Image (tube, rainbow, N blue to C red; front, side):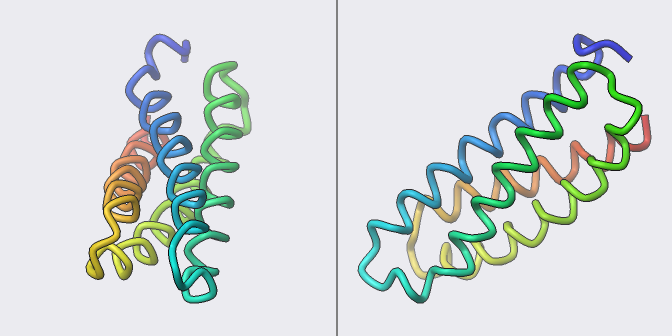
Amino acid sequence: MSHVQNRALLDALTKCAEECNHCAAACLEEQDVKMLARCIKLDIDCAEICSLAASFVSRSSEHAQHLLHECADICEACAEECEKHASMGMEHCRRCAEACRACAEACHSGVAA
């Protein structure tokens, strides 16, 4: 499947990586960074796997499907963690959680394709 056919998936992966990187950096600027340690770690993991998955998908790697499963799992874990902080008014965590949820859904759709 060509990267053009996977445009929505690639866009979701890229947006998620961007939001996770931003969220991690913004969390480091918050007053209680220690409370955000798990969020920051998941942001980093999620950004990395989304970037890696995008490269596998864009070159139609035979291993992309395996990676998309793991990517969806990490995106969901990151979304759950970010949602905890979003409820405390952290806008960067809210945006990250939204991007992670959308990416997880796109990964699940990409796996089914």
